[in-house]
Every structure is written in C-alpha cells, then in structure tokens.
Image 1 (cartoon, protein in one colour):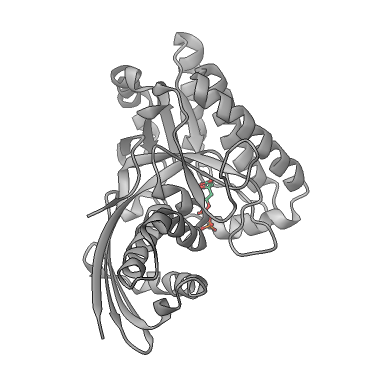
Image 2 (cartoon, rainbow, N blue to C red):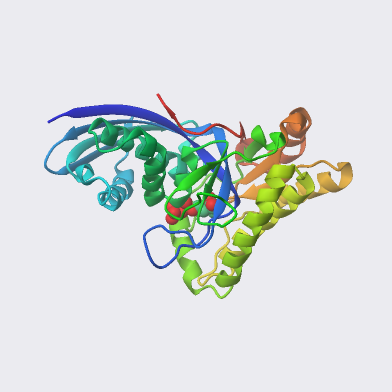
Length: 342
Ligand code: DP6
C-alpha cells in the first residue's frame, strides 16, 4: 500500500477565441479550436496524497477546510481518466487545494483546479512507471481536458491552443499545445479581472455548452471560430493591436450572444458588465488607447492592455472602472508561463 505525495500550482487562463460547444461524439471534444492567454496570479495550488487501496475514497480540502461539494466532480473526472490510468479508481485521495483568488470571486477555478489535479496524477503515474517524461505534459493536458475543457490549456504558457486546426501545427481535439509564436507585446500582456458579480452563476459552463446542440446559430459559429483562429494567428504574430481588439471583443460578445440565443436562453452579464464595456469604448474613442475587454462565462470583465500602458490603464481602473465592481474589487494579472511543480 504505497503512498504518493505531490503538489502542483496551475494558473487560470482567458480565452481570446472561445471554446463554446462540444462535439456529440467523444468525451469533451470541442466543436471548434480555441486559444488563450495563460495567466500568472490567478492560480490553484493542489497537494495530492494518494494511497493505494481497493476502493475509491476522496477527501477534498479547500483552503484547509473540508469541502465535500467538490467530490462528485472529482469522482466523475477519475472515472473518465480511468481509461488512461486504471490505478486512479483504487486509492484514497486527499486533495488539498487552495486558490490565489477568493472562492466567491466568481472566477472559475475549474481550469486551474483541474489542470493542477491532472498534473499531480501524472506525477504519480510517472512514479509508477506508467508515464514517460516526454509524454508528461501532453498526457496532463488530456486528463485536464477530461476534467474541464478549458483546463487543457492551463498546462502551458504563455498561451495554450486547443482543438484541431490546420493553421496550428500539432493541434488536437484531445489536448492543448503550448503556443508562443507571438509578438513581444503579448508576452507580458496585462489582464485585470474586474469582479462585477461574485455570486454563483445561474447556468454552469457545462450546461451552457450542452445548449448549443439545438442552437440554430451553432454551425455558423463553429465555422466562424475556425476562421477567427486563422485571423488570430496573424494578429498574434504581427502585434496589430487594432485587429486584436476587434477580434477579441467580437469573440466575447459572440459567446454571450450564443447564451442569449440558446433555448432556454440566459444572460450571464450584469448591468455593470455593460457599464464597464461602455466605459472602455468611450475611453478608447476619446484617447485612442489600445485597451479592450473580453468575457468568460460570467459577469466579470477581463480588461486587457499592454504592459507598457500599465500605469495609465490602472489609473483608469481606479478612477473609472472600480465603481462598477462588487465592493470595488478587481485582480491584476498578466500572461504567465504555465503550471509548475512545487
Ligand atoms: C467560456 O472549460 O469551463 O470559458 O469543458 O464543460 O468544463 P467544461 O467547460 P469550460 O468552458 C469554458 C468556456 C469559456 C471559453 C473558454 O475558456 O474557451
């Protein structure tokens, strides 16, 4: 009855071209390719203790306190990945996890949490002689995808690309790949997450993805996303910020328009989400700044700006945008280099 202990820190990520919709065949296969900035400060640290035993037993600690609500999701994850590593269903787990951001912040911890846990499991598989070093990251990304699609991209920095696309060499629906063919302006791009609404989301991402099956706009969207991936590749290479802004904002609003056109329809934006968007547009119009927003599946706004504009953009946050955040809260983050063993 061997015991294994390992720990990983894995960051959150923010998609520029969004994953929204899964193929009906396979498990966790995206309907279109996506690409994201890997973040740096928003991260989950997970320490895993695994003791071999006949049955499956899971204890989850969140910030040191027992959190049984997470167990069903982890159990489902372990069942999914048992086709890759059958040992995972025979053990006693203590998953000791903590987030650098408050749990109630409305920041999804599934990407960082699932990738941290996947990397821990790969460590155990490696120690057991079931995983070679050269397959480590790819396997971790496959496991992470099975936990939460966007988690597949969190393994790598500065960007992660997931989903088959002819313009992205080595891309796959099964795992994400690191992406770094980018202009230096993006290597340390800033993302301040404006915390508009800290409550639970009314519709989870997983349910939202499912609603695309019957959405009449879905096929057009999937085709558009593939085209946007082509455009994004050129934008990332050239550093054309005007084109970057136009594509990133369109992707964010398209994501939310898909939610609004689903059946049942739903809206995750809040009035202050729109106030922030308007304030950013006004500022851009007035001062010609190259600042923009994106959204994930929630009300919070990711405010994106170049590192060179940090002081001015953060002044703008304090003076204009913070008023629309719940309790004035936001988190400064920037592009980071991916997951690390600790
Ligand atoms: C809007 O990865 O959270 O953030 O695979 O069902 O766990 P599941 O969904 P999830 O969806 C993320 C959707 C998104 C866009 C993106 O990150 O690409």
